[in-house]
Length: 173
Image (cartoon, rainbow, N blue to C red; front, side, top):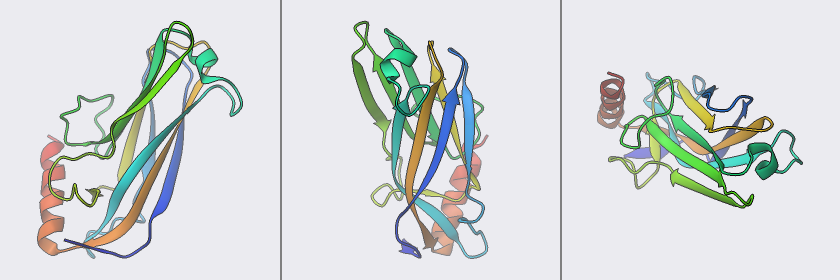
């Protein structure tokens, strides 16, 4: 289905949430990795989420606050906010919960998706951006979420590229 053109590399973006109950957005530009004419796509093998407080050394449980949570999602279409887990644009999602005693629970809900063709090899993306949305229920200080996307560039067959492009366009409606 896909022929790898590169070894795996990491794309990184940080989102700083400065207000509770307000979605915060960021993007990763994929324009230099995806090429329609050459049927070149990005194959996402894994997505990691790192939750930190106001500074790299601050305690996330203090900055987030007890009894609160932070959520982050990565999509390959701009949905304008958080999406349900059955949305085909959803690539990965994760959350961190801070219990009433300040204990943390971190999980990746979807890592990366397993929605159909290509799922054994990772998620193939033919769009020119990845969209990230982060939300904290409430915060005491700014919270930083770093998204690390481990990916490689692949060449797809004409049929496979077209199928993924059509699926992505259909999911946009």
